[in-house]
Image 1 (cartoon, helix red, strand yellow):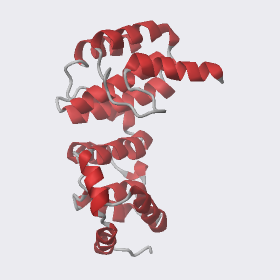
Image 2: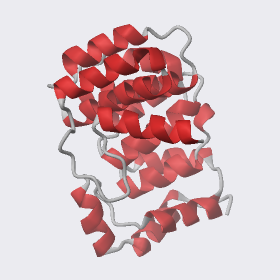
Image 3: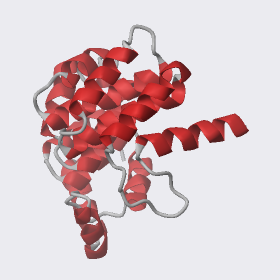
Image 4: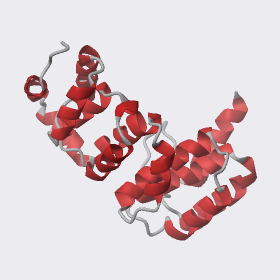
Length: 223
């Protein structure tokens, strides 16, 4: 299928459209009706095709963009191209996949992390915080953890939803991975009470940072 065209893929995505899936997705802010399992199966069949991925992204269609992120070559995108893509990715699932599947694997990730974290657009800033959380977990050298906690303490409470969520994840990650900052991270979570009342399904861990930190640390200690 090396010569697959954007039009052919769009036609196939249209056939996969499911009104029930769309209704569920729209509750989460995602305007598409393609079951993600079927989308991944299509991506597996298409394999990696960077040019097709770029063509699908350019359609602006949410399902097409999700598929594009599954069949692209993350390291093939330029820095400015990724910056433009993040600024254009407004639906939560596209934004999430773009950051996690593509930007995190890019040689430009650190440069973009620094740029985005300070961006006035809260959705762009949330991408920067997601990249910061990745570094907290995997490559802490050069990060000012105390400084990050200062910013979280000052700004998380009043941050817009997606930025708040990303900052809260970073707070929890610091508390989980860095014992010397755990007490402070838990204290910030307790004082700010961000996501304290977030509905959590049975068997799932609450995103409220003090509970999240305690649960993951407990699991790690049991191993």
